[in-house]
Amino acid sequence: MSNKSVKSIFDERHGKLIAKLVELRKSKGLTQRDLVAKSGYDKCFVGRVETREHRLDLIELIDYMRALDLSDSEILELIRTVVEEKNA
Image (cartoon, rainbow, N blue to C red; front, side, top):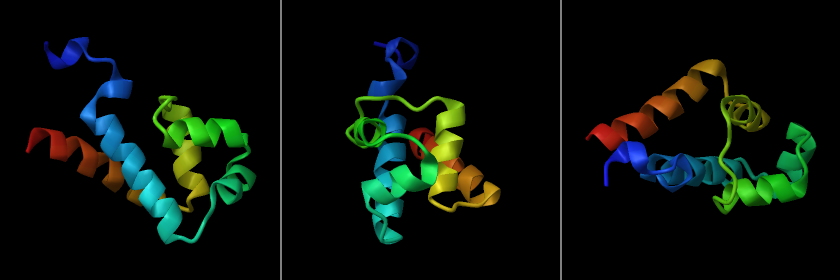
């Protein structure tokens, strides 16, 4: 099965990205509830993202990362890291 036939929610890069986002949230001492308050998304949404039941679209990803107080350069670096891990 080629990578192009794998839905992105099952792509290993998606899993790594979500794991990094959860790790970042926890390292900043934020709960899911805190992230809900900062992002404007509801708790079910945040829970589904973190359990990989929901794939973030580009706008949601940016909102999510900004709710984690990441700068634009940190957002780009995190995305670059995830993509490069796939190519390594």
